[in-house]
Length: 127
Ligand code: SF4
Image 1 (cartoon, protein in one colour):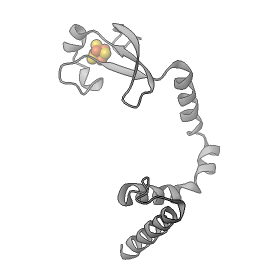
Image 2 (tube, rainbow, N blue to C red):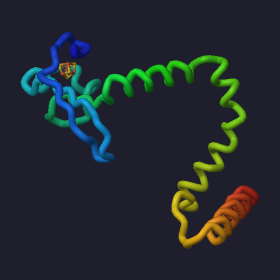
Image 3 (cartoon, rainbow, N blue to C red):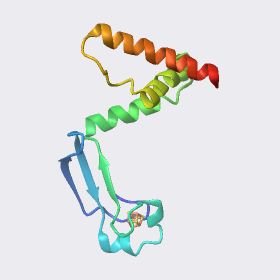
Image 4 (tube, rainbow, N blue to C red):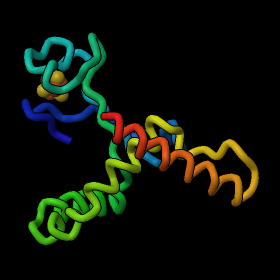
């Protein structure tokens, strides 16, 4: 891989990330990056060189294709109706811990979901 300043990467290696997904790590040369005046645009590390973590090729290409598709007018028109509910789900997840059930069994979990929905409605009402 070649960086924006034309420096070649030092090496690539396959490894697992923290979520146990396969990634390809691309490292650049320490000595070159250390003296580069553009490093603030490449890395947040104080001294370490630029390191990229990429998905394997098939996943990377699928991700790029999906991102490209998301820029189309057709996709945005199709997605627009979801905009409201995505905010509501996000509020449930972030504020009310919607991802976890505090109870065992569908009936109690369903009751928890209803309580969370009521809490969101009350919160919005008060706002
Ligand atoms: S910090 Fe390293 S990777 Fe980034 S532009 Fe400079 S030489 Fe290239």
